[in-house]
Length: 572
Ligand code: AMP
Image 1 (cartoon, helix red, strand yellow):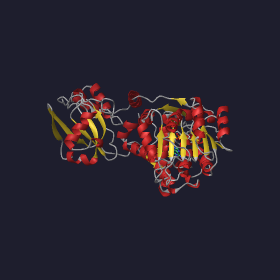
Image 2 (image 1 turned 180 degrees about the vertical axis):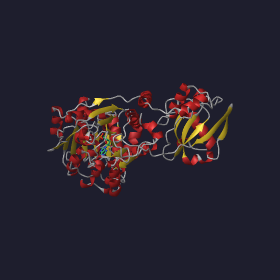
Image 3 (image 1 turned 120 degrees about the vertical axis):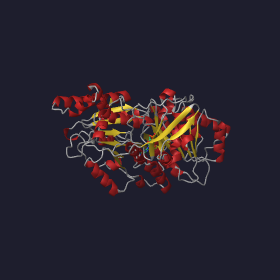
Image 4 (image 1 turned 90 degrees about the vertical axis):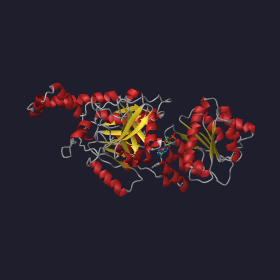
């Protein structure tokens, strides 16, 4: 694939800086196609859908066109809904963040007029609005369009479907004839063509020429999950299936960094590749990954191009790629040399349309999966553990001397076996903290006198996140203590701000919380006892090491094996 860089598109240093802040590495196909044509001043008809990167495709040239010294409306963007107007305004704000004196404002129905009057009066160069409310402002004389240089109709087909045709005509007539006119639409119906013919001058058509691509024989699944749940979904899938070597693709450098940090904080060995990393370091990471020296590579498309690793079990599209070709390139990295490969794609919100488009161009069916529940993950672990025990039993030839010693001490054989399961990380010993910070409920019930249960086994806590430590509180679920109570207790006793408390895990007789490093030092010399309404709570430090997992894919006998502890954790 021969892709362009943003720096080839003739953009100002301020916009290039904003693009780099956003972590965009290369133009999406619609951006590479539309930006030069728009910068050259042509009218454009762009056929593109949500999720293709179309907002920046018209937003960047719109920003470049504006004169900061002139505070009259120079660009008008029409959107069908307030949601879209807000999204477009957000993106324009981000893309113009380094352009001093450029202001953009969303104007839509249902919001207060006062604020909109105020913003318009102050002077803005870019107005993003829904047709109805824009008409209201024009009628009231609070929106002047006589200096507009560019009008963009975003999702023009939807605006016509919603009956805005008349408003659109009136708005266009209120703008100067010599303006640049831009239509973006997922479909180009006869009605749209008619609108284009009457309101634009020799428009250039811009659409993504999607080549039909053939997909390798890889098992493909997609999972619908909100953006904020993607990480938990990834952990569950990895835990459930026991994946040990994979690439996880994200669309921006920022997302790559965040995800790699989060995986490492959960005890996985992971590294990252993106265009913001120096070439020498990228080569080092790539070579280590080729030798399977760590489990998960988190990468953008740009950085991962050219990666050639044979035994990849898994490719994850943490973010959906912009075109079908990238999708095929990504998933083609697994299932090589006749091995079974798995491609997993997370889809949030309107991404589902993009996925359908990818399915259409790849002529494959991507199957819909459901994320395993925490219970199912646990169940799978138990099953695997039992399988391994059966294996050992079937092989026979077991030495019984240690068991005999315990039997002589009076323990029963079932108790001995059960306690060995506990040592192996079986469910009796394992209460995993949730991976996100538990949201505090609206009202915090009173904290009753805690009844610590010393016999309660200590859960095998995950390694804490970077910069955090686990602390234990001698108060548990039976007192109906809430995450909010835990945060208050920690605030009062350790004098820390609530935001420095991370994951909270409330179990029976005790609770655990991750707390920023600097507030835990005071506990290292001993626990702290704090008085509550009718009793005391002990707060102590739990030393859990952050530790790189040792691992080796099953089929790589030359690589180090799991340590015993990790083996029970990872390989069920
Ligand atoms: P849109 O199709 O405009 O709704 O864009 C979909 C998402 O992709 C938005 O969250 C954008 O911020 C993001 N995006 C747009 N262009 C790029 C790019 N070149 N690289 C990475 N992300 C992008």
